[in-house]
Length: 92
Image (cartoon, rainbow, N blue to C red; front, side, top):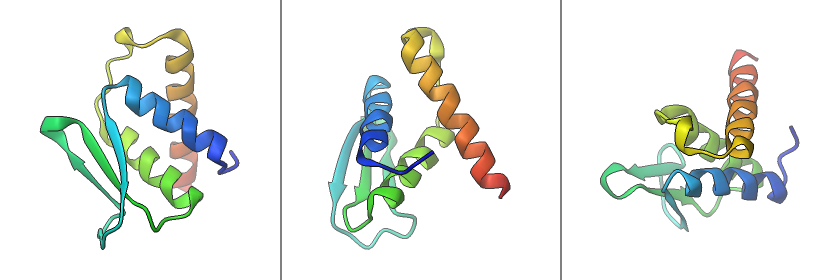
């Protein structure tokens, strides 16, 4: 998978479909992102480049328990693809 703005928008769309608000803010975050669970807000360090932002979004997706029954077929396919990509990158 190439880390492009197009893929970043797709991953952002998937998180938004799950009810999350994504904010890009300046900060000295240890892991690059912060999740505010009660409000479903993901705060990502705005100093990151596209690849760093996508990796943060993928980290967030992999940490969530997602119920795919409420998702469209397109979103389920994208979610499955992103999980595969994440699994492969973790094994490298």
